Image: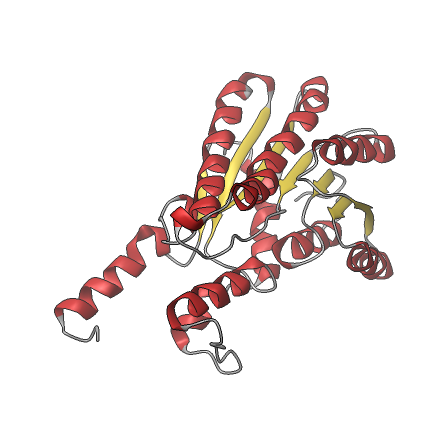
Length: 274
């Protein structure tokens, strides 16, 4: 599928980014994985190499444009090209009323989720133009489609990722560069559980602790396997998906298709919503 390709994966120290980097290497890709937490990144590097894969960890914070440029440069320097960029790095936002959101919080979320994604793409594109091909896969969220209250910076940042990706797909279609967005509804080990904790505390008070040892069926449905997500991302980056560009692909258990609205509507009219 992606054997022999060179891939840069951001946000690779946890969650979907980590699983994606490992899955790509397991399928024979040469991976450069980036993240802020060097100890976790080096552990991933050792794990993949012990399994026979090829992965190099480079410490980077995508909220810094210089780090975006350096990550791409390190990939090209190590492997001579860059075939795939998966922008999985992201941060959750503080759960708060919009009128209480500070400028610093707004900038923190935008700098990682939107600007980081944009500039990793921006620095990869010249190399892909020279090659005549390349794949950019950007990770968004159901928040890009469905507005969750009290999460304005995150919602806007992920909506921006969708439109950025569509713009790149249109602009570089004739140059052989593909760009797609994946809308995630939550994956294990990433920001999803922290966001859920924050939403629960907003609703129930700052001392509330969710019971996660035995989540109910609906809670389990909302959190997807990061390894399975990584496998789908590998497929989307493969030559078998070469016809796919400019797409917004939902991996969200039907949430943006209307599952949540349908459930609330049915429960409300049946007087089960108490």
